[in-house]
Image (cartoon, rainbow, N blue to C red; front, side, top):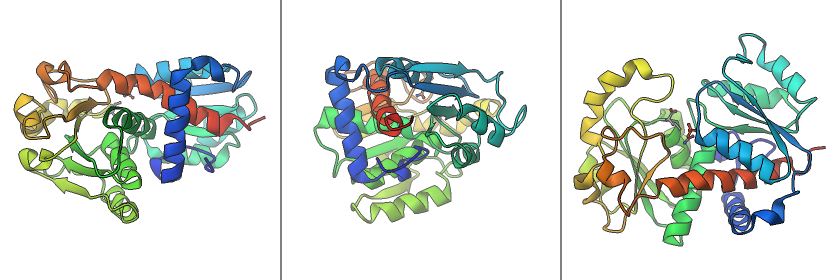
Length: 308
Ligand code: CP
Ligand code: NVA
C-alpha cells in the first residue's frame, strides 16, 4: 500500500485492495503468524459516535498484532471544539504510531491526516466507511469465489456506506446499483467519482428508484439503517419514505436465487430488513462483522509496519 493514510477506498488501487484481501485471508487462517507484526506499537481510537464492531475489531486487531490500543471516547477529545484538530494531531503523533478516527464531518479526517505524521484510518465519517466496504468485498469474495462482473444492489439511503460500496465496486469491477427513494441519492460528487473510476473496470454504478427493478439479477442485496448516526431526529419521518425499500422475502425473491443478504449492522429489524431475511441462510451479516477484524488488521499492518 503506497498510501500514508486510509481515508477512502479511492486512496488505494485495485491491486492494493486485492493485496489487502490476501493478507487478511492469511491472517484469518493463522492468527499466530502475525502475533508480533506490530509489536510495541500503539493505535489511538478516537470515537465521536458510538460503535460495537469498529471499536472491538480495531481494539482486538491491534492486540493480535502485538500492539496496544487507547480508546478515546466522544466525551474526551471533542475534535475541533475542546482543542483544534491540528493540536490533537500534533500531540498524538508524539505518542502513538497510528490513529483511527470515527467522526461526523469527513473534512476532520482529511485535516487530521494532513497535520499528523502518523497514519490515519477512517473508522466512519458522514461521507464514507471504507473499512466496512473492504470487509464486505472480502466477504463477497469468500462466498462467491470471485468479484468481477457481480452485481450488488444497495437498497436504502445513499449514505456513507453506499458511497464506500460504490467506490469499491468501481475499483473492483463489481456493478453497484444504489436503489433509493428520490432525494436520498448518494452525494453527486461521490457518484461522479465512482462512475469515473468504473471506466477502468467496466463496472456499472447507477441509481435506481424502483426497488424491484433495482434488485433484478443482483448477486448481493445490501441494506443499512434508514437514519444514520447524527440523523436521529429524522428517523420517524424517514420510516414512511423508506418503507417501500424494506428488504423482505418478497424483495429478495426478485434477486438471483443464490443472492447474499448483507448489512453493515447495527440493523433495525422490522424496518430496513425483516427477521426472515437477516436470519435466513442467505444472510452473511456476521461474516461481514468478523471480516472487519481481519481486513483492518491487514490495513493496520501495511500502514503501521514501518512507523518508528
Ligand atoms: N458496522 C459498523 O461500523 O458497526 P459499529 O457502528 O458498531 O462500529
Ligand atoms: N450509515 C450508518 C452506518 C453505521 C455503521 C451510520 O452512519 O450510522
